[in-house]
Image (tube, rainbow, N blue to C red; front, side, top):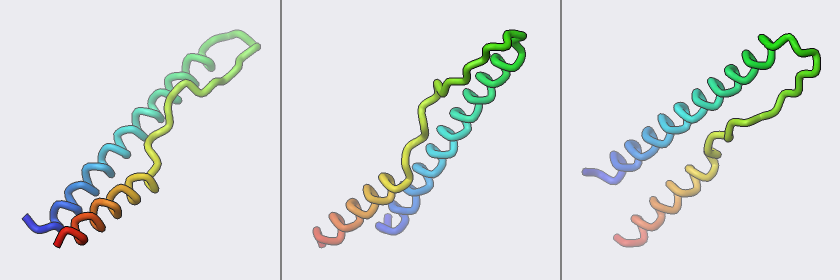
Length: 74
């Protein structure tokens, strides 16, 4: 396999994982809002219970490091 193909596959896997984590986070927030809004209690406090998805800058730095490491090995 070509190095470019491997990098593209890795990038797409991380993008798909990022999208799945984002959707899960949004589902958790929607579920929390539904629970708070259906309740008739006037003292409603919203708290964020879901974790944030991974930062894309960390993924890009990791891929860049991997690419530079492979290029140095040639």
